[in-house]
Length: 362
Image (tube, rainbow, N blue to C red):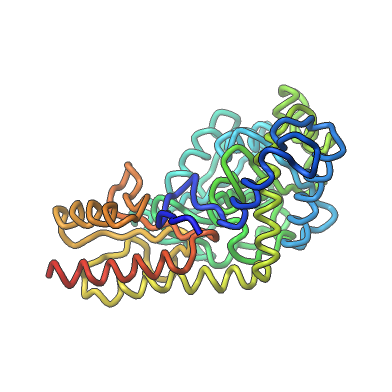
């Protein structure tokens, strides 16, 4: 096996080594076609099998009900920030947004361009250290939808239980924790996610949408920005990101081979615990940003007790082969993103490094 970096990048992030090996092997000649998957027509029978296979695997892994569309779009989650209110925030209606970090703030900024926005809950005053309790969340029964961000990459918080919004569609940006744990899709109106954390390489955005919502879609917007355009054409209205969809399908095969979402979730809990335990047992040398009941399994955010020591920690970690441990530029500190494809060995190596660094600098 090629020597690999300890990749804790927040996104684009680690991909399963086995998937990369498969892609390498098939890169020049996919299924004896004499072409790369990147070279063939998206209308070909060969690619159609890849495309539909990825959709069916995602349906199977998440037990997605038949009354939901599975779409492969482009533009990242950031385009979805605008597409959702553009399509579903009708005139005279209000959409409620739960603010738990920078990405939910960006979603609100886009939504305000199209209609009325209410704050269902916010943890900004607590520096986004926690997820609000279900009791703190308020919305109206005639809201267009309620929006949340399931995992907050910058601040390292994650929803453990989702609100039941009844007849109001619950919309979730799951970009950074999709495929990391089982989810009851039927509780949501829309789930969307950029692929570049757990699903595959950057370039594909997955949207899982209840079909009846399409009946409420705004018809006075450009063709490419209507969800029905993509639903009616199996996400093939225009040329899709073919290589990204192929890779997404291979990642889904990898999840199946790992034992499905239940086993993946167990692995993620064990990996995160290795690092959180070091933080908790450091007597304050390392300080986690998130409150314990809101801690993310995907993005472990922390500070080193002294600013100069923190710089030294990051420099020594980089020299030791750890990649991507710097916190987001907006908040600083340290962040270890332990997505599905980050192996347990990398998390154990980081935990060992943190223990030794503390021993050497106390």
